[in-house]
Figure 1 (cartoon, rainbow, N blue to C red):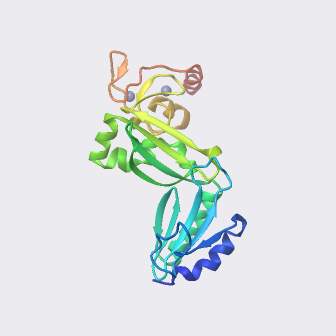
Figure 2 (tube, rainbow, N blue to C red):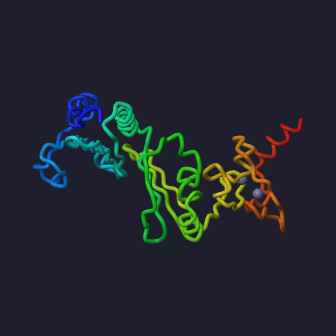
Length: 235
Ligand SMILES: [Zn+2]
Ligand SMILES: [Zn+2]
């Protein structure tokens, strides 16, 4: 350990001065959950009443670690690098460059996993963002393909919020209108074909049978815009 987290409280208060930070201790109402009398929690109240992130809290444990909570939570050890990473994340959340995201499953919205993510990554598909659940974990990927899921990307300012719903992995392309398997596309709401033509992402090696690709389910539909792009490329 390079320093004691509670010694950074003043610095954090200064860093966050524009956001009216307040300090809470174990003796304060609703903060009895803190372990030690000497622990500190820096609390920012969200001025946006519609945001699902009502507070951002940085717990500084005496001789322990930092915990950043804002929707989801993350732990940071008291080393300079980690501390710097945490401060960046806090500002990214407050300036709506990062969101708190949860992946939920089924009608009962069972929590599968969560994390902090950058806004620019949200142009990727939920399958890519939650790569672990959709691809790496055999157990979870099977489960997610079998039923409906919902990804909630929640920001400090709720106007940036985004909810993506998927299920049984079949979804409809915004550009061409064809159904496709979301797990086969690198982009949210575009089939592999349109994601390839419009943004250069790797295409599916389509295998057509009965008018549909057996790998990604694209049915060969093309928007006028896509057709014109393809014609331009030929000339
Ligand atoms: Zn498409
Ligand atoms: Zn295909």
